[in-house]
Length: 104
Image (cartoon, rainbow, N blue to C red):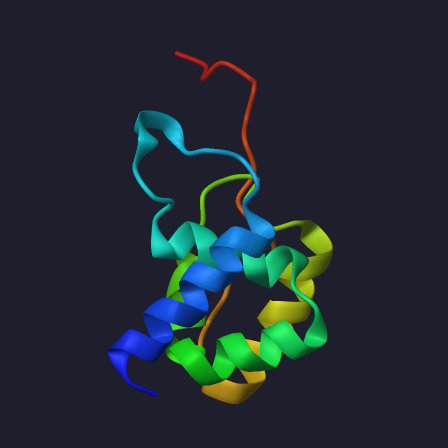
């Protein structure tokens, strides 16, 4: 796939899976669109995403995901799928917000 094709695929997923407007009126970052597609995408969309961006990029998105981007269920699916396919070390749990103040 060419860079233009990848951009088109990501833009299409952005329209499908990100229904809110981003702050500041700028487009959603590609990593956010990819993470949302990983979290909510159909199996056909997952296959297209893997083909378009590659498994290494999906691992990078997981490693840099912000809390709340990927559910525990989707994280487990992708961790198993990508760890097996790439040999990458992906944390057992998705990043989560902490509402507890740090102890001094």
